[in-house]
Image (cartoon, rainbow, N blue to C red; front, side):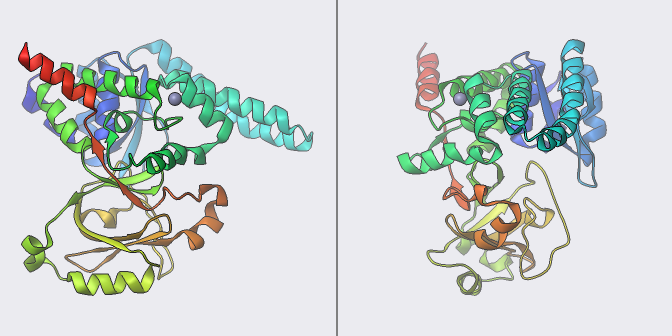
Length: 345
Ligand SMILES: [Zn+2]
């Protein structure tokens, strides 16, 4: 395929580009992707050209479609079977509650999670950890990154995978991420460059490891003329809404991997990531505690949430010091070394 024909692909979130190419290059059995509606038609044609099997994987809305892609009919069949079993799980849970059979319910949920993980090609250690500890355990790797001081130098491989790593040093995750990135490099040189530069963007996490958006920090002195909200004005607003220490950054936010939106009562705006977040933003955050974000050009509210307001609605298990922080990524040292060696050869 000619390089210019791949151009629409960059409309996907970088994580989904990596997963898609990993499937095409047979490095991943199946991927579940979020496709912006603007490129859905192109995406279907592209998949046909690549001899991929595609099918709906959840409801579409006014922003995006959820589509599963794989190469083998057998894999598609397994996915459909597991979705049927997943639907059955609600019945089983109900029966287990009536029978007071909590252990049976847990074992069933664990087995289901292990099968799903195996289907997507996730490392067994990560799937097992996730199955045992539940969704909110996604934060663990990010808590560990904070503890070890690695939160500003996370290997890009961690952001190239779709699963929640069992730890910040999970070898299987690093190896899998590397395989996927190698698959992208083999597929297209220009796509590799696009993917690498986007994986190196800082990320703001609302919940450690789960919900995030990428951001490109901007120089205030260079942009001040185009903004309707000044640095002083924003910092004052942010400090009246968040507890100290408050950090602020002016940044461009590209379209996140998924968009959610719901009507909410002021002053809070907690749907994350939402369409108002795209563009030039003033972002303020109190690490672990909350965030406040406004569009720097229009002054429109993009986000305002505090852990103490939000956690009672979603569950205390989501409380983590890794929430509401910016993480940065680096090319892993071995990768640089290998490239250096290749160049010398
Ligand atoms: Zn692992």
